[in-house]
Length: 316
Ligand code: TXA
Ligand code: MG
Image (tube, rainbow, N blue to C red; front, side, top):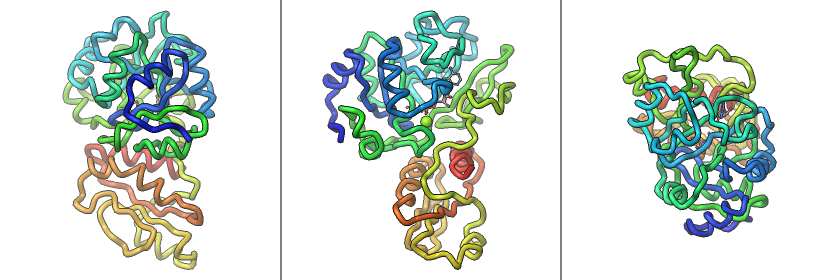
């Protein structure tokens, strides 16, 4: 198992020698390495068992660092960075030479974001390079929102987890890019689409939709070991009533169905709370013996869009 602690200096030392470290962000925990070192980046792909066609997000301190790593930045990108960084927003922009093609899976564009967690901001302030960091889970599995989740999943392969407590947003960053000078949504996430559109106007859909290498667009993702089935919970319970009770888990939005293996995302119907709980609850339901997780979509507003996107991919 990995060492878990709050020692930013230890994390720094490891990262400066091309080692990888799990880091807290406001969205989910990341598996971080020096983004400018192919050596470190290779370790990330290897530990996650991630295919090389799926590129990594580069974490920077803030918009003051932007021009080191990207060029031809649209005005609306600068506006978004000024408004939402540090925070759960990733911008897909034309990369500078200094970013290795390994990070972008050969693409001329790199995904960059400035994370908000104070420990990780402190760490970035001590480093002379940005951090490439995908979510700290094995490829395709549920994203980690606590240090212990990372330890369970990847603890064997990493020496240090910087413990920043539970993630306050709980869902990955929103990813925005530009196609023919128009802003496009690649992945709904921690900043609601409406909040972004208030600045950019209506976001487009990617022309590349459907290709597996496009941001956050792999059809199956975030998946537990148990099969996830979505629908109306009461109907699903009726449909699967002949299954053994302890083989079924229920993930509901507000309502308690009196099932022993159930999690309610937000009894008061708060979508921010639901987002914060989503991955941890999915993981808690995915225990040995559970073969089916019955889940319902949440209202399609605010962070609900991002939650529903994850739920759909978990059930694909
Ligand atoms: O909130 C987050 O974004 C978290 C934390 C750790 O920052 N990170 C995260 O990384 O969710 P990951 O690797 O799990 O998801 C990043 C998504 C992937 O779907 C990837 O395909 C896409 O971003 N992506 C990254 N770089 C890209 C690029 N150059 N072009 C297109 N898509 C890119
Ligand atoms: Mg991920």
